[in-house]
Amino acid sequence: MSNEKIASRSQLLGLAGMLAQHMPVDLSVEIAQEWADDPESIKQMLSIMRDGSFPLGQIKQRVLEVTIDPKRTVEEWAAVGKYDYANTNYTTAKFGQFLTTRKDATEPYKARVVAFCLGRSATIDRAKRIRARLNLKPIGFEHIVAVGEQHPELQRELNWLVNLDAVWVTPGGHRYVSCLCGYPGRRDFHLHGASNEWCDGVWFFGLSE
Image (tube, rainbow, N blue to C red; front, side, top):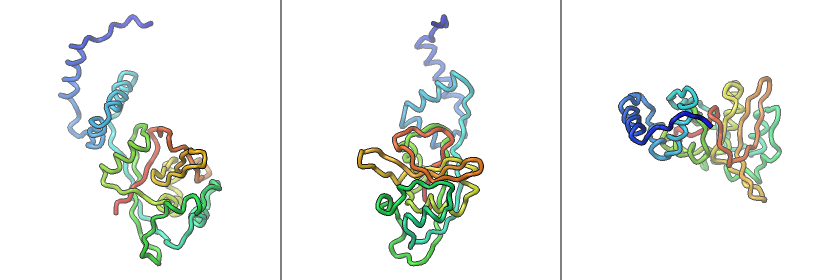
């Protein structure tokens, strides 16, 4: 057991005052609001500060334009990406409900999607809350696979890109989301457990239109 003395309550209050006094003036509004909404985030931040360095980084964003073909089925979307591996559960029967192509569209159209990375671990619910504060809308199944098809170099660069909205529930009650995965020399279209807490390098998606 460590022989270090534990700080007193008055010392902790004094430290809290100093932290408030010296908080960065350019601290991201999303990070500040996240701490206010979820005290566990503050505990996580302080724990990391105690054990090592902790950059108060901003949320990263990448804006992309993709072309959406409203006539494609789920199977066609999964095929056009020419992945090294695509999960066989990507069928219209299981994921067709998540296609959100414009009802009145008969020809391909442009959509603006935003990939964002929190720079810290997050559950799906937390990522959705922050996406809403970024004024981004939910995406459809077709948006993330359009990125895989039309921006393959980005998939390799960012490694993990997650669709928060296409959540497939198996007959046994297990929840899965669709993910683009980039590895050296290959590109995959995976399913991943939706209940997991994602690591700090994962990118999520929203619509900016």
